[in-house]
Length: 354
Ligand SMILES: *Cc1c(COP(=O)(O)O)cnc(C)c1O
Image 1: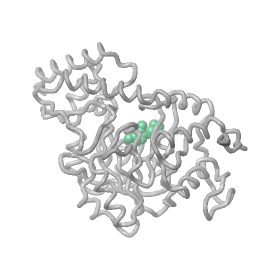
Image 2: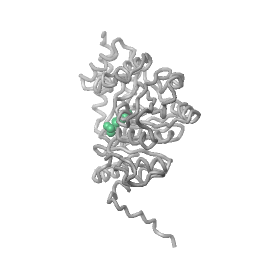
Image 3: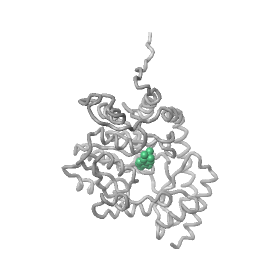
Image 4: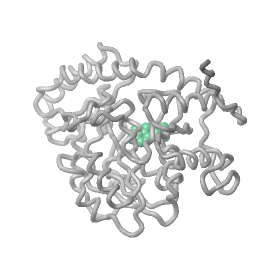
């Protein structure tokens, strides 16, 4: 007689979190998932679980959001910004190599707009150099690359459950990994090291409170059930906006990288219009949300909050961000709203003199 699979009683009482972690690991095909309180917390936890902290350097793209930088600083490590790859895609391997020094411990690849460009080359580099590879996959839930989910290529992938991400519960996050020791250390760190990890018994180290609250975990479980529909919806939204806008002079659609099936987090163009940042801001003012115009995305080495970490000039990263038009979707954006955005983008691009 087949025995029913009994779930280990959870002495901490975190039944929803434990169930969510099992369901996330099953959904993404990883050995482990560790739920935390935000995407930023997931990245800091990943670094701590890799043993990275004070005195260590972490390489990350200059083309990223401030949250990735803040997570590295919160872990006590020093962020080192890396130039964008050819055509602004991914990381420039020559610059990555040049900036790898004795203090370098990890590379964070950031899958902005759901694109994982160049991740397999970066993974080959970290394998040969012995660096850890952490994926900031907060915008890439559901993207696949060469058949693998984004966030499962490196040592660990970090995700956000903030509203607006594809699976969401208000606020939250999680890490995925196939490395049990890394998973144990992440689980211990996020709750004051109250659980054991290899070579570090419970109570032997300080951690933090990055716990995901039970009611949020219950909501995340509910929304995880609808993940396939939510993903298909985003992809339809992105395809609809591209259909209605592509061919407009001054906007070049950015195609998916080789082997990638993006999640439709954002529609994506390279602007060839004059004063592209002003154009993005102008569109935001007319109700078309976009990362530069609405959220003031700036290459990290030029961001005022990160300037203390800037070293040198990264012209390709600068140009990549400044010419980006990334229009993100939420599940509530209707076909009519998207048609209106398309009309606005086409009209304003045609009229734009700068
Ligand atoms: C949303 C996001 C984060 C941070 O997630 P929070 O849950 O807001 O902390 C980090 N990196 C990227 C690329 C994001 O899009």
